[in-house]
Length: 421
Image 1 (cartoon, rainbow, N blue to C red):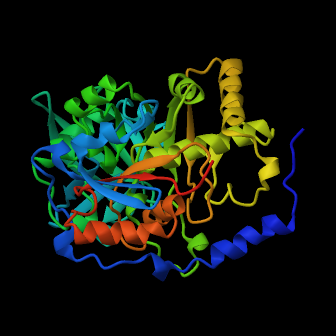
Image 2: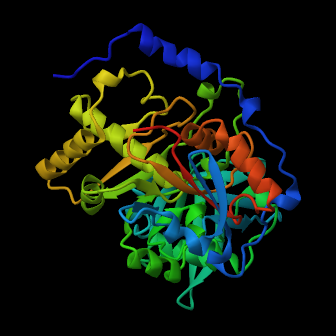
Image 3: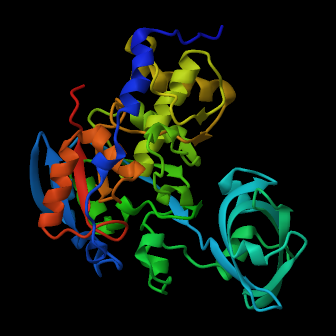
């Protein structure tokens, strides 16, 4: 029988606390010259700021393995960035830009959508839309395996920016995208994509195509770093969150809880679930996407544990109005997920999350975070503040004073939770 969430004073109080968050308290001055517009030549030579128990020390990223307890489980996001931005020129000369956001038909599962043949429908971000009328069909020719292929695009649903793409030759959509598109760099880099970005804006462990932005905390890892992690007995596991363009959306409302969080697709294997269940030490996600995924996984287990639903969808504020006594432990949540997978003979599960992590959130699985330095007033700054408290200001000021490079191609940090578990 489905359990209902009661209305208590403590539960009602969470919204008052959340609405007291002032966005201006999460801004800092970031001049353009401190943004890393290009990556370092050698990935693992970036700076590494380590924060723990109020203390900051400075390292090089190759020192990361020595900064982790030997029983740490690192969790990586193995999504691969696709060339999701394409340009089409009309006969009038107008150029229409299309940025793929999310598949709609014949499947919404991104991994499967990349293998669709002949036609599909995607939600897109459309540049110069006023010049592309609802009845117009755009065409272009691309070379795939040295053979010309014609791609036609038209609106499947004009108001929703759902675009119908059609091509021949029995090719997969991934083959078409790779021949047609370009890697969509973050807008704050304020430059065109260059040939080198095809390699540098991709983690060395990228495995599943579907992201429109890189999980940039992972850009610092190299085979040498992985070898040293293995030598020290530090475990690693992988999940997949296909990063969407919404990760760059600024908060534009006074009340942060009113911010519209983007929904992203996540995939977890049974191997990862077991790695988490058997973890002897701290679980440390590589990047905010991995952290949001792991915390969302816990809340899916909560829904199963409480018999609420078997649908894996975590709404942005779902975690907040609970009493602690209502919630299972992380161990119990993961056990509920494992049982659910066993009953259904699932080797992996796919879900959607729009979880919003801001100060006041209690982390259930993650004890630390490897991450870059984020935009002022962003949802990611709020996530960092949820983890380390007001120390985020000290951390960012120290990084600024020590000449760290900021944002996607910038330097790294290892942050440990301020909370006691």
